[in-house]
Image (tube, rainbow, N blue to C red; front, side, top):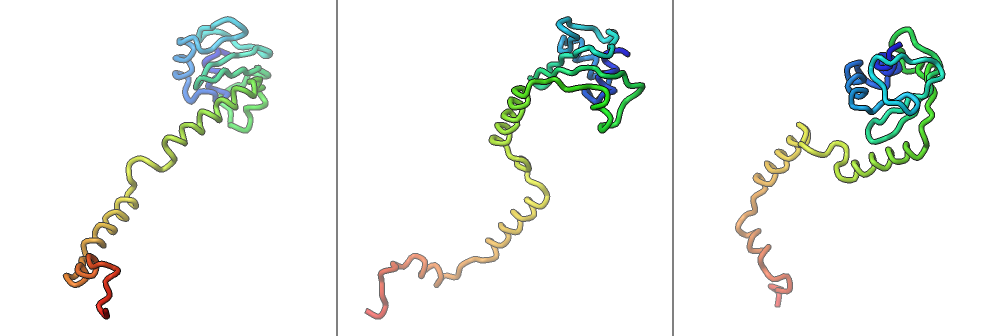
Length: 145
């Protein structure tokens, strides 16, 4: 099976064309050799893939006949990626969450409604003139004195 089709079948890339583009960019190698999309994959081959600044290593166990369901993928490949690479990935995700948490960014419709309600509530709660006098009066003033 061609390597681009294999990487698509084992769900490493979402589409076959994305897999082919990554291979053209020399991000996929078998053993220590950079390959072309037409390279045939055999059981026992170790595929090295550079994706999201992480170096993955996959060992081919079996060649699938067609695209697999996610639960069947471990029957066809074995993940040989270093644990350090996954730690780097976790740290990168944590740093991204630090700068921009999930749900932040453009306000949602609910946020907009809440802001409109808040602004409308402030406009309706105008203070009367005598309230302003109390607001600006000195707290230490005692009218009984």
